[in-house]
Structure formats: C-alpha cells, structure tokens
Length: 277
Image (cartoon, rainbow, N blue to C red; front, side, top):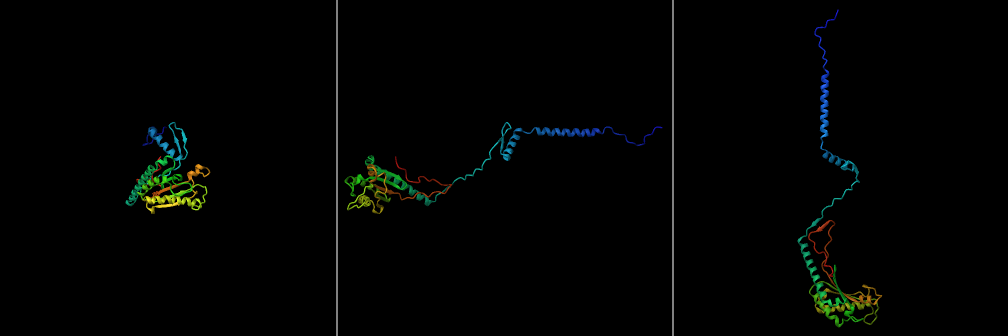
C-alpha cells in the first residue's frame, strides 16, 4: 500500500543555484570593471611618475625605450652665497674722493715730467714710470755728472730745473737716490762709492731746494753699487748702473682689502694709473 505524503510538507526548490550564479556573475562583472579602470591610466603620467621614483631611490633613469641606464651618484654642490655689497660711510666716501684727486694729480705730474724730459727720454738717458708707490724717474749719471764727480754739470741744470718746477706745485714726498757701478773709487773727497753716491743725491736735492721745492719734502740717499739694474761685467751694464733715481712717493694708502665674499660698492681705481706706453 503506497505511502501517503504528510500534510504540510514543503515543496523542494530546485532553482536555488540561480542565486549563486547571479552572485558569481555580479562579482565577475565588478572584476572586469576594475580591470578596465586600471587599464585606462594615463601612460604618459605613469611613465613620468615611474621615472621620478626610480631615479630618486635607485639612482637610475629609464629612457623612452624602457631601458635602465645606471647613473653615478651626484655629489652635493655647495650653496654659493651672493656677495654682500659694503656701503661706505660719508667719511669713507670723502677719503676716497681725496684719494682719487691725488691719483689724478700724480698722473698729471708724471705726464708733465715726461714732456720736459722728452729729449733725454728719446735718447734712452731718462725713463719715467708710474707704480703703486708713486712716480720713478731714472736719469743716467752721464747726463748729470762728470766721471768721479758729484757737482752737477752745465747740461744738467736745465732738465732738473724743469722737473723741480713740476714737483714744486705739489706736496708729495720726494726721495733722491744716488747709484754707482762696482768700479772702486778712492779719492780724498770720496773714499768709496758710498760717499760718491750720497754726494750726487745731495747735489740734486740742493738744486731742487734752490728751485722752490720745500726742503721738508726731500730726502737724499746713496746706495753705492748695491742696487744694480744690469751686470757690472760689461761697460754697457756699468753705464746703466751709474744713475740718479728720483722717486715721487704717493701719500695715499692702498684701500683696505675686502673680506672674502664681500665687495665694495663703486670702488673705481684701486691704485694709481699704470705706466704709459
């Protein structure tokens, strides 16, 4: 006899798999959406970002062909500080103005001395030069003195008087130096070249004083043969060494050196003008 179904027994659902399948399809769709969104990243921006990160952390660079090029480590460069410009006080500006006026006066005196001594300079007997310490005038002794004598000759008065007239207009200190060659001298007046060189310098100083140069500005010095310009082994060299040097000394000091990395504002000429020619 067949069994009768119990009353109220639920009907079995054979379509429950559709729920799981729908969930699976939904997840698969979401996965493809995510993959598509990742594939649409801007390739140019991604390459720039990748290059920057790789260069920063691994010291390498990636070129356009995606090949890695190893770069050497870059040494840190020191930071250069811009120089600080020093401004001058009114007192410093006034002192600089006075110094520049003296520079111009010194240069003008050098040009005047060149003009009055031009005939002797053309023959090589006189040279005039300018430097950091002032004006230097070299006069060959043969123009001023007879051999072994300290008295100025007749031909020496005119050029020295012209030079003295130029020097009398300024107040720069003047040092006159006498120089001889190494040939010894031994006379009643000049036991050695020291006395001869000093006497010759003194003769020039006396002429300058007679022409109007203030005595307080003048100094005479004799150096014998201790400061030669050329070798005393030849007659030509000994002739060059027999000379009188007139040094017009600059009274203005050189500007103080600036500190490293610091410059002055508007600092024109730092020394007197260079030699002409």
